[in-house]
Amino acid sequence: MSLDNPRSDIDAFFIVPDDISDHAPTEQVLIGQERLDVETYRVSQVAATVEQIVSARYGQQGASQLDVSVNTIDFCCRALYGTVVYGRAGWEELFEPLRLDDTPLRHFATAWWAWKVSNQSEDFMGAVEAGEPDQAIHTGERLLINAGKAFAAALGDYYTPARFVYTQLRRSAPPSFPYQYFVELLRGSWFERGFDGSRDVMAMTQSLLIAAETTAWDLSGSLPWDAWPDRFDHSTTRARSIDVLPLRGNDGVTLHHERVTDFQVSVRALVVWGLAHLAEDEFRSELDRLGTHFAIDADHAMGLLAELRARGLAAPAV
Image (cartoon, rainbow, N blue to C red; front, side, top):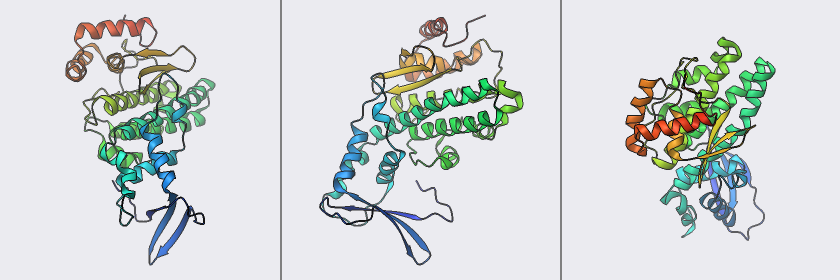
């Protein structure tokens, strides 16, 4: 899962017994033309970090266990991808909970990036409502990057530095993903429509999170999601509320609105909400295809859509 460029260094982790006290946590070593970033961890630190990811609980009961440094996810990512070149017997077992099944890491990393998106959406919409174009473009970029990172994590591409979101989506996203449109939005093309273009940013952000949260939990990395917004008609009557973001945890799905009561919904309702921006024929076509994965028939879907509209989570029918 390398993301190397010509100036990349090599990361080396040293795991030491707990009773060794005089070690440098991080240092750089130059060997010829190669630079090693050497990080040292005690056995207990490794065990605690892995356990923190594997046993975390988050969702409707709160997100406090997602409030960790990105370094926690980064360490587990490197432990998963890395190669043990030398070590004491049994120490490799420290990483077995991740290497035998990376599902807990997939769930945690996806939820962590989505949580960051939720926290940043207020900054973006606040800048839009305040009429601050520079702030809006900057915060919109951060919003899209973090939503893209959630999607990458759902696909099992966990590497954490934000600058690599482009490489990760090029190599891991399915062919249906509109990569070029995503990049154009990141570069601020949405502002060609003025602040009305903020709908494009929020629509793509929502779709990235919906795709991530259905993929990470329900589809084990196999994505059937094709319902990406691609310069869709802004007058469409089938539109999601732009102030709402989906957040998934161990115990279900929350449609989160910063200023309104959160709504707890089923996975099927999340899928239907994810299709709500599509025109009638596209909606039914996508529903037929996705219904095989989520067991949603047309009548049930229309009932869910009506309920979402009644709660103000999707635009009413005209």
